[in-house]
Length: 216
Ligand code: FES
Image (tube, rainbow, N blue to C red; front, side, top):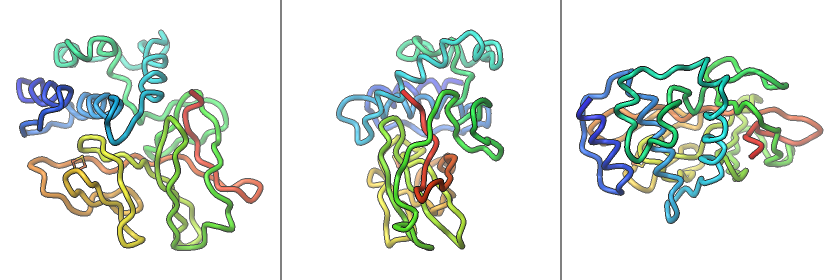
């Protein structure tokens, strides 16, 4: 608990976080802190719209009822995170049903979103990678063996924006973590494991590749 608290405080104050043994139960708190850190002005990943939407969604009574936060989390997420800590048990990439989105396999799906066009289908041949910025969401779409795939473009370590390396991998410029195009972590030299990139719902409609993103 102390390690997680210290890690979050370091992160939000812009210091290099000190490592600590990560438990599964810490994952939500860490991810939320990373997103908030990434949202700060001057960050490589300006995500203020995302945080505003997150605040709004987390404030909805229905979300609180569906995902009450363990007491321990409330303590961890005090201070700088107090504004959202009361409902931080709602994970950022949690699939919330509704609308036309088919969440099923851990895909990040906003509860009030829209299909955002990212590239003409003809411009995304097999093996290609295309980056997109949809305001609240940045990421990459790929076509592999005819199958579309989309992942977040924000590093799960401390929220830096990723870039394509060698046409087939995603590199973080901050601490050099390397991800596969399907979001899997390929390599890093960090003291603790980091999560894979969240996947995003993606489809092709009317000759356009679209990604489901928050409507905020
Ligand atoms: Fe540290 Fe990406 S922010 S590896």
